[in-house]
Length: 254
Image 1 (cartoon, rainbow, N blue to C red):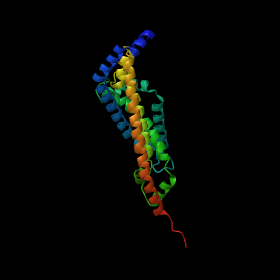
Image 2: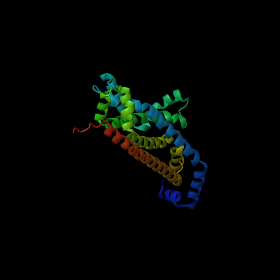
Image 3: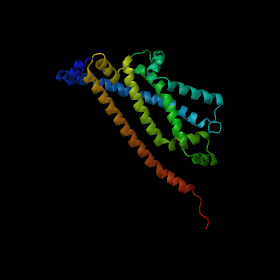
Image 4: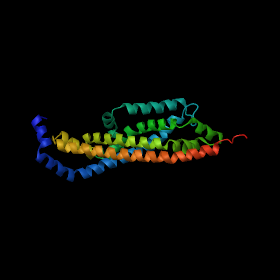
């Protein structure tokens, strides 16, 4: 793009009038497509990544859900491989799977499959990290009271790591939002498609800036909501922990 064309696309009244018309006519649908694919992809990624992260955290030899060594190594290898592949390459590789599941490789719904494939290994690792941060003393106390491994997972590990999981959910949403914008380059729809179609192919820099600004606003909203919910969950968890500690405290001898 030449400097004169860039200056015209940024500073001329005609360019911004055209950008505003595009914003009013095409951005509402693009915004809906972006939110639709981001929320659904994150939901499916957590449905897959949450149990996988629990197995990675609790499947050690001395863990509460010990796995065969070959299975533990295989799961870790699978997660590491998928996390290592750049999303643009993974997206192209997984598109045939989108055709099998969805029936097409073009459109917003088709992009959910590669987005889930890119997000669930990340979810698995952050869930594993959150669970490993839980104090081993709580697990030992639950085991001493006869709790089963599943009871420990659902009544100790997941509730104790809930604030951290909310923060990680927020992080996953923002990452998937960025991936969804990238999927617009191959017909995935959403704000990424608007930015690519107008900003890159047609040199409408004003439209590109509006798309980027809207993505930044979405990230800020998601981050603020996630931080607020995480703090609220942490505050509601602390009184319960204090009550449990007082209940389990041994009485002092006279």
